[in-house]
Length: 283
Image (spheres, rainbow, N blue to C red):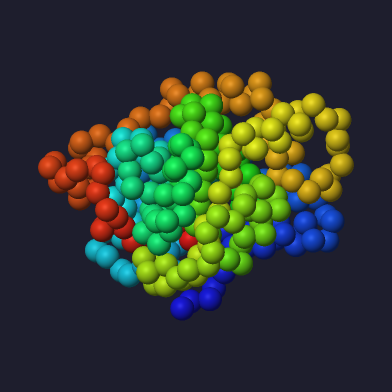
């Protein structure tokens, strides 16, 4: 297995080093401007699939394919939402995908079926963060991670009205999500066959917890740069409402033409097992 560290792993490692040494979690440094939006064109989706393929192939999580895409069955579902971050030249430099359990089998159900079933019995509406990738050539990835999670949480909570976010992560990354974003472990370590048996654990967070943190930091006068939470860097509630409105206007489901372009047949059902998936989100 290739042990070269991905840009995502580097971002998490650098953030946790700052956390452990009581340094500011994010540096207020000048960086290349970038924008975040929902992928809503064929070109943007293809850029995501190519970036993910490049990153996962480099980690030996997937095998080579002729298209050089990392496409999953959930990508054909109308509710699946892909967030992208672009640099000043309009190039996609990072991405994360949201898979909602209203129209899809969740990617993580492949190895955490009983754990997901238990969450569902409480009536929770679950969304999974999958295929989180950052361009290996881009350096300001600590800020990008915060931006992605802020916008994804806004979309899940304010727009879709879901209440639970889960994701499968590499065990060495768990402290980042647990200590800085308040995720809890809901599934123990297992080997994931879809990514060449890389180890994984399942984390989850109720979205009311995220919003409580956002409200708290919007009211506190805390200005200490050593505050040990990424929620200090999220938008305040009023700003989140504006972002939610923007995301509603920005979102667009994948079209039939795009499905055919990416290899889905007209008769293929959207709620299928993940037989075509090459990845289940080892973040």
